[in-house]
Amino acid sequence: MGFHIEYSRFRYYLAVAAGKIASFILQKILKSSASAMPGKVAMTIYPDILKLVNERCSKKIIITGTNGKTTTNNLLNFIFRKEFPSVLSNLRGANMPQGLVSAFLHDRKKEYDWGIFEVDEGSFKRVTQDLKPDYVLVTNFFRDQLDRYGEIEKAFQDILEALEPLKTALILNADDPLVSNFRKLNKKNIYYGVAHNQYSTDEQAIVESRFCPACSSYLEYSYYNYGQLGGYKCPDCGFENPDYDYSITELDYRNHTYHFKFKKKDHEPQDIYFAYDGIYNAYNCCAALSAAQEIGLPLNKVARWIGEFEYHLGRMENFQFPDKVVKIALVKNPIGLTETVSSISLDERRKSMLFVLNDNPADGRDVSWIWDAEVEKTVNIKNVNKIFCSGRRAEDIALRLKYAGVSVELVELDDDMDQAIGKVLEEEVEIAYILPTYTAVFQARELVLARLEGSSKKMSHFREYLKNLKTP
Image 1: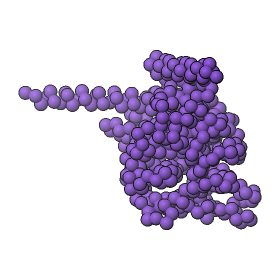
Image 2: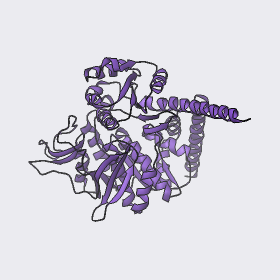
Image 3: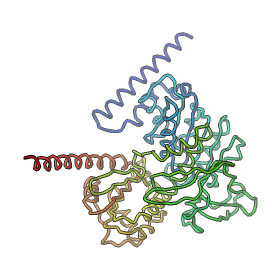
Image 4: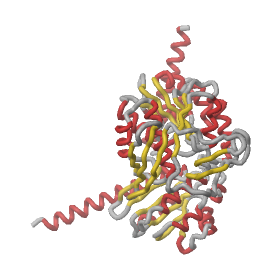
């Protein structure tokens, strides 16, 4: 018995050492991300390392679903770290088992107050074999990387089967019929959603799931917020939105910021502002606020922290150049691209845009999803100087823009993303939007940061020059 314990301990320390070495090589020598590979190396040596992570976290939240996982995860971490001294999380979006282990290797402690993890839908079953969450927060289900996941009903079924044996509370998006269908598990269900508002519509072109998950009849909608998220009811079996425990109302967009009220059931609403675009971010805020309320954090403090939140991972992240703002917004599926374009259409500043479309394995080899997105909404965007197209499939996104009705004179191709970013930044505009797919987002961010650093140095030299001119 003692031998086995010592052997297990030896394998653990060997796994940690190997993971650290892999991280050093990736970051210091190859100048690459170390968000997943160190964990993969460690798990090869010590497969039970996730069980150890489970033991070291006093409480755990797992966030899964298609869109919004990374934003909700980062929001929750920002809030929880204000109240708890030790929080472990995979903040860079590496959401498979090796990504969670890599996060542990980068921030290794003997115990944590909370473990907050986003988990890929396809990895949920594997992760929850070792990591037993106190809460599971489900955002939504949209088509994403169909060559890897299949249809959204499969993702739902896989997560449903993994949830059945777990003793966990569920924080569910009440406005997504598939997500709210987890109510049939009869666990502690907490529902959040975004009420009908001025941006809700009567029609929606992209609705991923039009049928009742309970009886397969056609769902009737009183309004849509985006995709299949909205107010729904089955005329045959009565399946409908469950009552909200937490909700967002009175949504408004002013001065490039969303303002809304967050309401806990049977309580007075709280004013919230969030400096990131898109009604999908209202859902992300509502999810994070709901989880924070469930564990008892004071709403007035959480509301203030939401307003202070800044993103640093290419999800509507802002970079302030001397002459313009640069905003990077990840787009990776039809709904995400549609809603990002819709958000940009609310911005009336003079602008340039860059689409970066890749088809690497992590993006999904099949890029036909761009034809399912409402790219036609690009025509509604005001004050556009130029739209650039780059990435491995630059021609595909340029062709999609042409068929969407965008003037060919407005569009320019450049396969080299570095050059394309240089061009979009040279435009005389107030804001430049960069819309990359998953494997391009971090590279685009690094290229923008490098130019921002160069721009800052130039400004510093210019100020020094002016100072010297004034010196007698």
